[in-house]
Structure formats: structure tokens, C-alpha cells
Image 1 (spheres, helix red, strand yellow):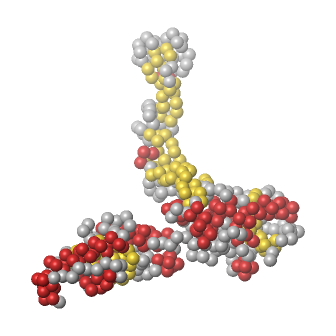
Image 2: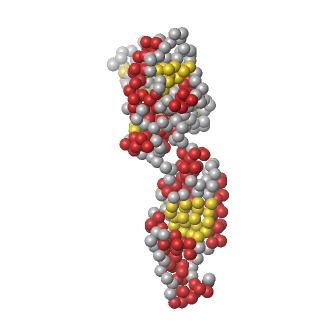
Image 3: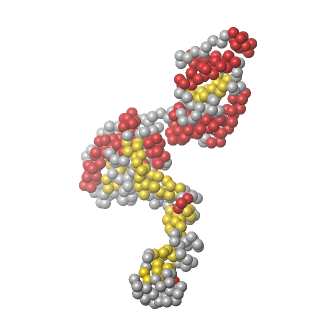
Length: 463
């Protein structure tokens, strides 16, 4: 089967490709030929006249993010794997030859185009097939000030790369620090020194003059022009440098109000909203380069990222326990409740499958929703309450709590979830009675102690 070269832009008359390639000009995204072509059998040619949007549409579509880009348009130099000035059959053949190592590398991995994590796997494949890091590049056309050319056309590429690093599939290395406008969050800022008196940026350096005779020191403008200087303090004329006066340095002066502006105040003026942000109060934004890890290669080989785990989100909160520890502690709390006729409520919250949520809303949004859910749950519970996660179920034990009071807690939690989480987690809760809780423990090899004597009688009366 011939490899497919998608072309956007104006194709020169008579342009031909090597025998093992077939040129497809301005292909449709659903072209069946591209569906059949494997990762190492397709590339993109940006011919003269090609637009950035055309290139982004093809890479974030039928070709996939990792496809080689041959740029003869001068529009995508940061993303281009091979660049050229004049597009001919000979220069095209050379460009395809230069891109061959990338194509060979891509043949080793599953095709990511139609998978749930197409962007993530495309980013990993890009890093592996080029054997280089995913670097940020300056982007004056974007409010963020930088972009990741490797993820050309992907919205939220920075968040995606951070998520992959958090999962251990990429590793971070600091690349640049930008400042952000305090009003509109743009990083397109102009840094300038301002006068602390009148706020003007019309500043200039003046030479300092030190008059030996009276000890006065001030800017050159106070003394007048060189060769005709008069000391503003004593009225004498300092004539000879090194004998009558010297110049110990310079001072910053404001050309608007005429006052010294030393030290000046540094401010950022936003190119997007024109508001000023003092430099000492401006938020900083760090940008990183990303390199592929061994876990990233494993994900690339399997064709999928690690699953989004509910348990990972709940692990940091104070009430969280491992399933085994939760069972042991619940066993003790059930025993105390039975012996002393004390209330205890056990709640099971069931979530829709994480993978189903990922398919509907996207991985990053679901992971953030789980994180918020865990945070809100931790705030709603007491320190003495217990929590564990079993698959897509959240188990909560609330000692010394009646079912009525537990319902009030869950209602408040549900209100917080609706207010703070944008996606529908399809979260349902059920209450477990003592028998159900003991059955749950028995399945894990834990059994409640029988209640004897007066305690047993009390328990029978309660039933």
C-alpha cells in the first residue's frame, strides 16, 4: 500500500512524489484512505499558501499529532520536521527522505487517532519518534506568550502535558518564567521603569556632579552645561574635573516632572487590556519542557494511558484509609456500636465508571472533578469519620452519627458538588445496615465479634 502525503496550500504544477508515496491534495478529514494508513504511512506537506489553521486541522484530525510535517509555506517553522524554501519534486523527495526516521519510529506504536486519549498518545509518540523533548516556544500572537508547537492546534496543550507529567508519563524541566497581567491574565506585557512621583516612564540617566568646595552633589542639569557649570549651592564654578569636582556615578531623572526617580518603580503594562501591574505583585507563570519516561513508553506501547482512578483523588484527604485498614477500623467501630448501643452510619457512594466519564467529558476534566469531589468530601466529614475507595464506590463510616444526621451531611455535600463541579458525576448514595456492613467485611476476611450478655439483649430489644 502506498504511503499518503496530505497536501494543504498551492501545489506547483508537475509536482510528483517518490514512487512509494501518493499525494492527496486538500483531503477531507473522513477520507477512508487515511483511515487505512498506519502511523508510519502518512505525512503532511504545507505547500506555499498553506494557512496555519489548515495545518492544525490536519494534524489534529486524520493525520494525528505525531505525523511528520514538511513545511514549504514558512508558516509553521516551530512545528516543522523538515523545512524548505522552494517546493519541487526533487526537494520534496529529499524532505521525505529526511523525515523517514520519524516514520520508521512511528510504525512501532499503535495508532492513536481514534482512541479516547488521542492527544495524549500523540504527544508521547511525538517525543519518542523525534527523540527530543517537547519544548515551549515564544508565541507573540497568543495571550499566554508561549505555546507548545508539538501539540499544534490542540486546545489546552499545557494542561495536557502537565497531566501527563503528573501521571509519570513525562518528566518536567523548567524552560521559562513569564509574568501575567493582574487584570486579564495575559503574558504579553511591556516592562518599563516609572517615576515614583508622577508615574511617567519618560526617564533618563544623568551624570552626578560632586563639587569639592562645598560638598554639594546633584545631577548635571542642576549645575548646567559642561564647560559653564555653576554650583547651585555655593554659586562657584567648578572648572577642572578631578580638581574642582568629580562624577561619582549616574542618577535616574524623570523627564516629565524633573525630579530624581532613583530607584524607579518597575511596572508591566498589558498589551491586551492596557492595565498596569506592579512588578512585585505580578503573578509568575512557569513553562516547562517535557521528556518521555519509561512509563510513557509503556503507555505508548499499550496504546492507552493509566486509568483515571477515583482512589488517587481521595488518597490525600485526612479521613482516607486503605480498603484493608478501613475494614479493620470499621470492624472495631461496629463492635463498639453494638456493645454500647451507639449509632453508626455507613454510606456507600457509587460513581459512574471513570472510563465512561472520560469518554463523555475528557480525561483532564474528569480528573479535576474527582479531585474537587474528594476535597469537598473531606471538608464535609469529621476527622473521626472513615473513608475508603473500592473501584468506583466511595465508602464512608460515620461513628456516633444517626442516619438522619448523616443524610443532612450528604445533602450539604451534594449542594457543594452541584455548585463547584461542572460535570455530572452521576453520584448515588445508599446506606448500609449492620448486616450489609458485616457482609462487606466478611468478603474481605474480617468478621465482627458476636455481642454477648446484656449487650446482646439490648441489641435484640433494639431490633
